[in-house]
Image 1 (tube, one colour):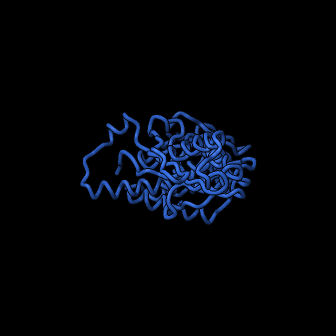
Image 2 (cartoon, rainbow, N blue to C red; image 1 turned 90 degrees about the horizontal axis):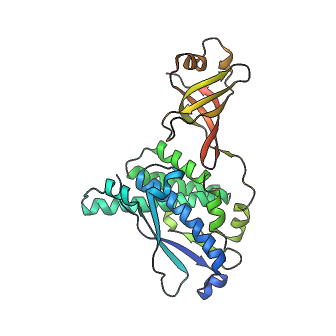
Length: 288
């Protein structure tokens, strides 16, 4: 199920200047830019059921709402882009509309917080937020597997956005928080900022099953070129490294798939660059 927008999401600043209801403008501007990237990414998944970093601007819009008096909280609204909204708007019974919007809001907030927790090196908080996101996306009709894969891609591709988000922490605000506690939100501290701003490591995703088409195969170096079935860029090829010893056996599944030009399901770990798969490490061929 799809909805046109999610409920307003709060970005809350606490401590230091924020306690006096002010925040230094330059780091605040950078923080809001990062928040826009993160919330738009989560909103795209919640509202469209897919994640494509290149198409976020056309899929969703993120708006600032009027500030609330007596605080330094910023409320933002995420809604589908004009073309998408026209395409997905379907009359729903009021109670269904409310339930789906609540799930979409939870998914958006949880995906944002799972991403922050990932780069802050807080596995407990990341796991908790991911569970909320997956559960909310399942309520909207997505499979758990698809939800997990989207959450993984989103978090890996948004390190830069998280770095921008935390800019005021330690100088003009002591903590910030995005969304509700029951959506996996937590106060992001100066210690978290230090962890987030560390040099970005190589991004290796969790082991998963992918279906690929092999266009090049070298039995000596055990390397290959593949396209991922279902990729949003179907003609894009990525490099692969096969560690499965079965590759050395005559008529193995890999050479058979290459010779016959048929897809093959493999167990692998993807390597990401800017949220896009640029290499996969293949350990097993899945049996039919």
